[in-house]
Image 1: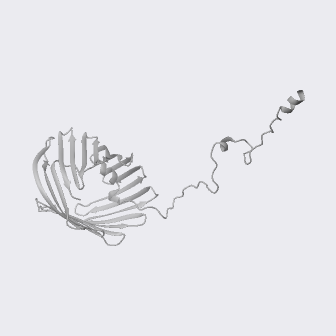
Image 2: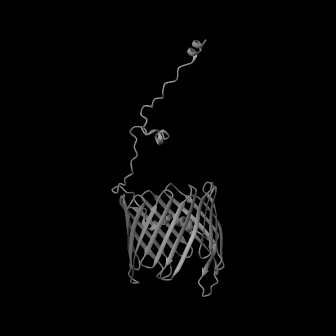
Image 3: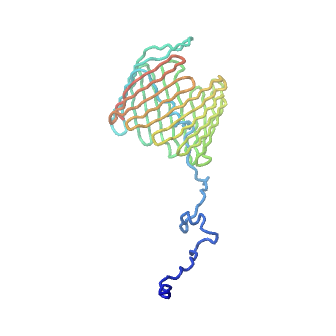
Length: 333
C-alpha cells in the first residue's frame, strides 16, 4: 500500500523558466505597455522654413473676430432681392426703411426717419468681379476685382456723391507670394499706402504697414502679428496713431466660436473691450456681443427655405438710451 501510494503522487513541477526576450531587471513597464512595432519610431516634427503657408491679407488679419463682434446691424425694415440672369450676371434690389442719427450737442440721440432704394448689378467671373450700386440719394458705389496674373490682383473701390469733396476712390495692387503677401494702395487726397505680411512659422505671421496722406500732411506706420491654430486665432496690432488692438477667437466646436477684442486709443484715452459669440444652428446662425460701454447686440439669420433668409437685428445702448431693432428678409442667392 505504501509503495502504491508513493507511486500515485505526481512529481513536483519543474522550475519556471524566464521568457525569451524578458529584460533581466524584471517586467516593469515593458510588461505592461504593448510592444512597439518594428520599424516604427517616433520622429520629432521639423519645421520646413522654406515651405511655409501663405498668410491671410493684412487687412483681413482680424476677420474671424470681426465676423462675430461686428455683424451687419440695421434698424427698421430691410428687404433684399437678388435675381440671377445667367451664371455670371445678376441684378439686386434693396429697400430699407428706418431712421438715421443726427449729430447733436446734447447726450440724447436724435433720429430722423428715412427710407431709400438701392439697385445693383453684379458680374462674377473666376478672374473678374464687377459690383455696382446706385441709391436714390444719388450715391454710386462700384467695386472691381481683376486677377491680372495668378499672383497679382487689382482691386478698385469708388464712391461718387453729389456733394463736393465727398467722393472717394482707391486702387489696390495685391501680390501673393508663396509665404508672404504685399499690397500697394493709391487713393484720392494724395493717399499712398503699403503693407507686407510674412509667415514666420506655420502658425505665426507678422507684418507692417505704412501710409501717407498728402493733403493733411499726415503719415503713420503700424505693426501686426497673427497666431492661429485649428482651435484659436490671436492677433495684435499697434500703430503710430496711438491705436493698440488685440483680438482672440476660440473655436469651441465646429458650430460654436467665442471672440473677444480690446482697443486702446492713446490720443483720446478711450478703452473698449467686447466679448461675442458665433453659433451655427441647424437652420440659422446667431451672433452677438456685449462691450464695456454697455452696448448689447445680437444678429440672427434664419433660413426659411432655399434662397430665403429671415433677419433679426437688435442693439441696445443703455448709457445713451439708444435702442435699435430691425427685421428683414433676403431672397435669392
